[in-house]
Image 1 (cartoon, rainbow, N blue to C red):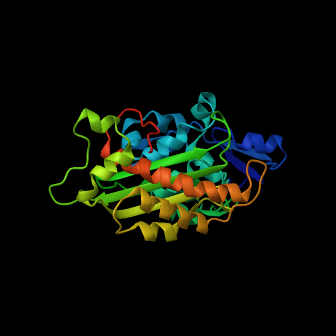
Image 2: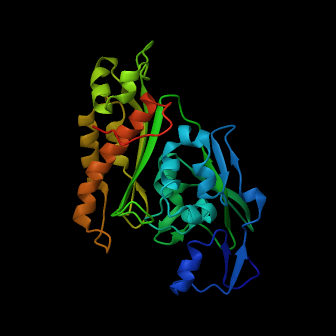
Image 3: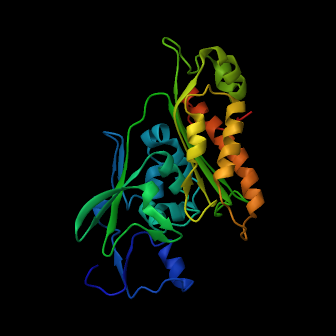
Length: 307
């Protein structure tokens, strides 16, 4: 890479080939990393580690990731078509650094670190610092994203990603919101479903029944896409969540705070005012969905039973 003028790495090619056709980039050389096995792996022994060339389908079909890092599976399962997911890599999605990158928000709320290798050696960068602007990253000349490292989270942790589009098929998001929440419970208390009625009831009713358990937010992350030049965390909203007792009313308040932190713009897919209003809605829904996954972790499919 360092010896080739105007070279660019390519793995799945689902982003770079489109950019070449649109004449937005014009690399003189393409270096394929598709068959480098050390860049395509998934390791769940301690937290989650996976290579930059891991495809979205690889993530989507992994049961441990689906349960422990649900927000990431939410994103990979709704990106493009099966054909695209089979070749598109998570590393490519992140390195494109588009504000609408589907895996960016889930990786932000999962506190992902980006493992980078280059001529000067290796280094790790927090994903929060990796994005420098639209299409711009912290990668230096000749550097390559080797993979991603995500810590293990506590037992009472749930996460979710909601992609808001005009249609439910192969569309870029008008808005994307991801959340992760960890709750603490009273000593001896149990918040997981124990009977059939719990599994079919709405999460709002379940939270009302668990009011006396005082489910307290121990840790939280909220990330938003297509609301700024880069995917961003809503840090004021995160701070407002911590230490509070879980309730739908609290989540509505947090949605308003998150909306105040966003700086959306008008685009062909949606106007700024609409995105601001939908942030309020989607943050609340994503937080409720995250709680739902703590209370009902054994469900194979997570339906949209939000109210």
